[in-house]
Image 1 (cartoon, rainbow, N blue to C red):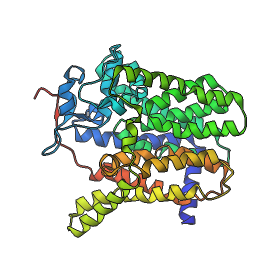
Image 2: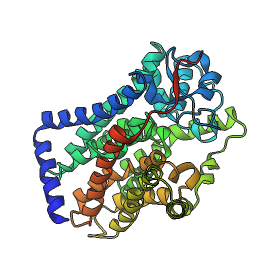
Image 3: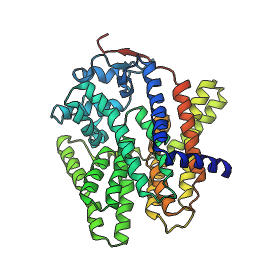
Image 4: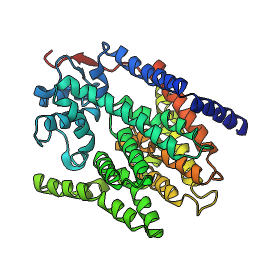
Length: 408
């Protein structure tokens, strides 16, 4: 294992020393994933938004003409995937309205206005520009946050930022144009300005990250504890101030949607239920003699289960007093994964894999503080997951039922 780790680390160091080559690898990797997806669906960039026919019909006026619309399978109304929610929400903002798109549950989606807000900046120019904005922000923010993270690391550990740029969970988030990578990129950029003591930009970016997805708090909360322990008053107030805009938005939502409640997210906290039922599904499939394709689909989530246990274990290794704020971040991420239910998360690879996204920069920052932390296993498993994900996307995933446009 040490030989493999050293070999991969050496290659990452080479890439880190030659940024043009690194960005070429990044473009090839993300480009290959993108074009392999488009190829399956008439080379249409709208395909990655994952419009479902059910919701496209409900929001027909804001569905791009000629968009790829998924029909679903037998007994499925063709609900698509989450990228469409951010798209339709952004269209409301581009139209200078806060009307919630039709058909979607606003109870835990509506608070996540950050990503739709960014998309809406392009959306003023039209629906196709909204789609462009979804690609633009995923790529731009990841690259900017990579450069920011790299600058924060010591020269000895700066190569670890390459893992952040190429990590499979940001790529998986981009693959379905959802908000996880956006949130993590924003929080890393915010942390960069925090370290530079530019607290205004820190507050704005952190607030936007929280409004993009709530796990941003998993990074900010320990950061606030660190500032409190060091009695840095400016830093304490800055971290506390990141809650002002989200609280105001949540207050508006409680007025706008009388049935809305912030505690709705707790309905998804089911300790170990998701992982236990996932393991049961593996044994049930093997006993039933499931086919090779179905077995492979089920086992695709198994490396994530291993990664969960590795992540939970590693925070208790090394010099515990060093980088403890990042240890807490990783623990909170693992708590989120460990309490994720089967139906909404562990039953679908994309849903559970994206939950690991924040763990990568948190681990990199922890290693920068304490290189004795036992991280090699997590590091190698992440590389393995990247390889498996690329193989799945390029050679295994088959096209879903779809049509072009919604008038057919």
